[in-house]
Length: 428
Image 1: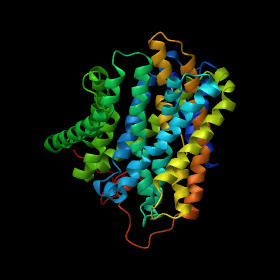
Image 2 (image 1 turned 90 degrees about the vertical axis):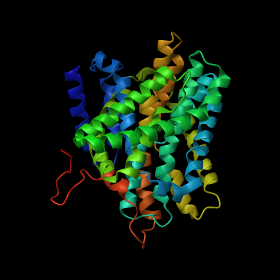
Image 3 (image 1 turned 180 degrees about the vertical axis):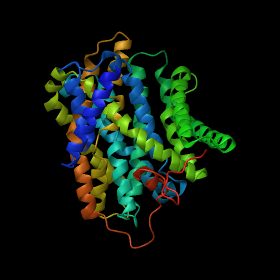
Image 4 (image 1 turned 45 degrees about the vertical axis):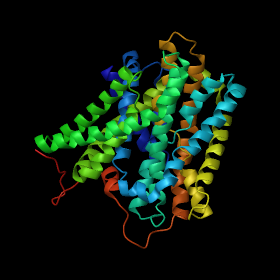
């Protein structure tokens, strides 16, 4: 297994280097290499590595959500206010609804299966959107109207909302012992408890770090371990204590930035380094689980449902921005920024297939969902990354006022947090 993983990492790094010269996100290369070396073609990926793929995808998702949480301040949320909350729910709801309606027609899925597909496809990719918005923030582009901040906050919360709904739908489909009424009632409770538990965990963690002063490397490992344990606790106790663990993960990052900014910088620096490996594992192993023969059969309908979903999402974005101070070009930029699909689709795209297999159900719908989720990444990630960069340069005006709030931006975009001597600061 170690040899298979090492070879995959080396090849992915080479592919990223080549693709970035053509301004194509490296994650596209990771995904294609995964498909090439997976069981569908060459079969060179060790089966033991595929067996632990769900755990690796979970860690990767936790890393990106922690990084997103470490960029959002309370003052930032006050600035973007209701718009960010609307953008985190309305566009995804419309996109998921459109896919739910088209799934039975284009793929022969049931409406619940189509809703699960919609919950997979509807999420925005933080791996593409977050770094680009932070880059605009650093260059003070669109800062006067807080456009990058609005997109950043809305996209991060959008992912959490979609993942919460996805878990609810998959649970209903595989027939877990819980009534529909209880699941619907528990959804808002899980959001509130997720935030509360995450804030409490964040406060506890920074106080422990203040008391015992562990090295920064141990701090980030502790935060990651606590985040993974929160997910496991929800799996074990979710039937009687519903809470959204991934929302709790984001809340940990939020409280770290609010209460211990220097600690947040350190955590984000190390998480950025961990993400280099986590991104490879996330996308390469997602590609390795694709049934290529099935994927080829869903290209036409898949592109159709993706395009229809994105059209509905764009309409939702424009609806949320109605009567705002943004110009029509700026509203178009925000809608364009919600185009890329990547991180969440790679993380949860195979989830329904695995759940169906574990429940002894027909895995055909799960294979369709996985194939369309991979297709959504290939179809939207390269175009979205290029379009956001190109449109941002043309549409976003540079601020003439003070520099933007970069507490989160510096910590994610810079390779290290440096002290006076230019060295990485780490507690002894």
